[in-house]
Image (cartoon, rainbow, N blue to C red):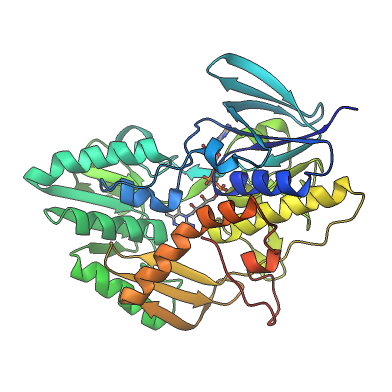
Length: 396
Ligand SMILES: Cc1cc2nc3c(=O)[nH]c(=O)nc-3n(C[C@H](O)[C@H](O)[C@H](O)COP(=O)(O)OP(=O)(O)OC[C@H]3O[C@@H](n4cnc5c(N)ncnc54)[C@H](O)[C@@H]3O)c2cc1C
């Protein structure tokens, strides 16, 4: 009898979680779990702004994370998906190969939306470790003579990056540009702390603006003004990987796979989508891409597939946000605790306590992977699953 084959595409936060949990959940059945990722290095996206300022971070390797689980690792990039034939084409060092599957976990994440003219050619991104290293080199060149860095996008990725650059390179003038006020999704106290920290670090904030073009060494604003800068970091908006749309899966306007209540694709139920690559609706609204929501979605998808293999119906996926943890350089942070729909609750942490909390959250996926090799962590311990009774321990 041929084993059931489950292919997990993408070895980021969610793909690794799904592969480890699938291997454990299916260890008593004849099942092959194969994880595909272009690099054997695990990218801790939550630390890319640290890499961008030249900090050394841990070197996690995917084969080591999978070691002992039984899940196999294939190094390569998925280039074509045929959900009718249940096949995926992989381009790797040794050329192309085709993998057949019974179930597919689509965990390809999202990348920065670089559709504004000039961004691809003249701006840096924090999409992967290589991009962060290139930006770190540019900042190192500038730091001796001084210069101006524009961080475009005033969401939390932009805030964390601007604070880290300003703290690591005090010679550089950092401007944070965006349409919304930084921290606008937080409560008044947390927002005040965040804005105070940016001010203390010397970050200039320009809100109510949209960058419409990035020429060499400048940014053009929607009002027509051109602002000269020495480096641009683009953090404004994300788009999902293009493979699902090209394969004919039902996707939303951002290319995310539209899934049902069990995270199966609404058009192709043998495909499960998780993390940033999935459009997941909850009773309170749509989940937006975070590690916090991604890791529980990945664990859930593994459980759902394992249940289907045993002939059981999976229960609907339920998730609620817990917090918005934001680093403000290495010595300060703010954590806004939230309602399940990610609107701010009453409590927040600031300063040293928030730094410790944020670091624990950033480390938590690696800890969860290690534990998941030996035990099945209950879903309600990975995230708030809705209702007052669940006390959450969230990842990311
Ligand atoms: C600087 C920064 C800070 C952040 N901070 C936070 C935070 O504090 N808290 C939080 O919750 N979230 C944070 N996020 C968001 C968080 O990183 C994402 O939500 C999370 O990474 C999503 O996980 P994922 O597995 O869906 O995607 P990813 O982690 O991006 O993984 C996708 C994987 O798929 C691989 N891949 C892509 N294309 C292919 C292909 N064709 N074939 C095979 N593999 C492919 C990629 O190489 C990658 O390994 C931050 C993001 C950034 C950039």
